[in-house]
Length: 95
Image 1: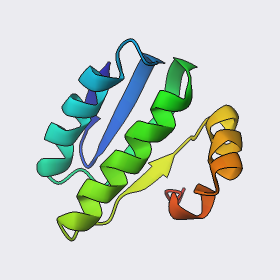
Image 2 (image 1 turned 90 degrees about the vertical axis):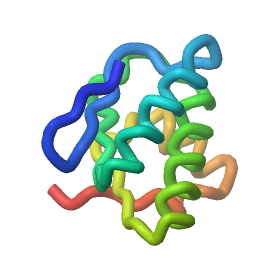
Image 3 (image 1 turned 180 degrees about the vertical axis):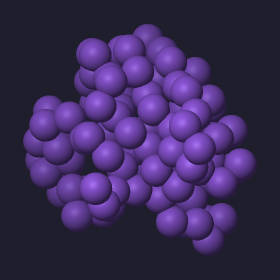
């Protein structure tokens, strides 16, 4: 579901209401260890739960005084973020 590649994590497979709690918790552990980038390019199925996880991870990183950025954000998640008015809050990782 999540694998670590040095200072980044790669989320793979589905992220839906059915498994978002586990994905969120696994991501939190990596964030506590200093991960600064979350790559979403291998997510295969998603719903608004993925956006909720992104916002939760951002909130926790900021609370801890850390920067966090996201790579390969799926277009459907970008669309949902625009609809909810939070797209400007999600920093994109530099390439």
